[in-house]
Length: 161
Image (tube, rainbow, N blue to C red; front, side, top):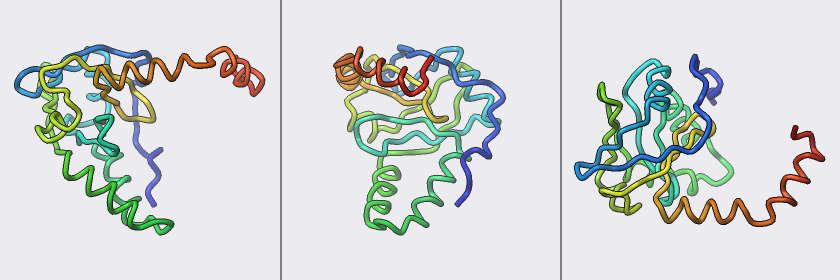
């Protein structure tokens, strides 16, 4: 299986959560930091999809190709791999980011996640840009805050600075 570490990323992923909006034509205008991050992938063509029908994701093509190979070679539960790959293909699509940093979210994906003409929240994680609807963002925020002091204490015991 190809190693996803083979993707050169000269620009570090931006930290933080960014708010944006999917416009009435299905375009997501990336904030400047995220636009530069995508440009650093070496191409403006991206794959926009969802693996779980909860969160959309913007993948660099090289990383998505690694995922496709992973699906093909996954032997622990081939049906699971086939189903996730099917979902990604069914809701996803290739897109070229334009000069203004806009990425077209496939119509099927916009509808499945209820993000048509809606605000969204963006986060870089594991080399991918995650897109959260308002409902998903609020739920993640709620879940993250539960027992937060306990979580911080555990992580500090394990080496978090």
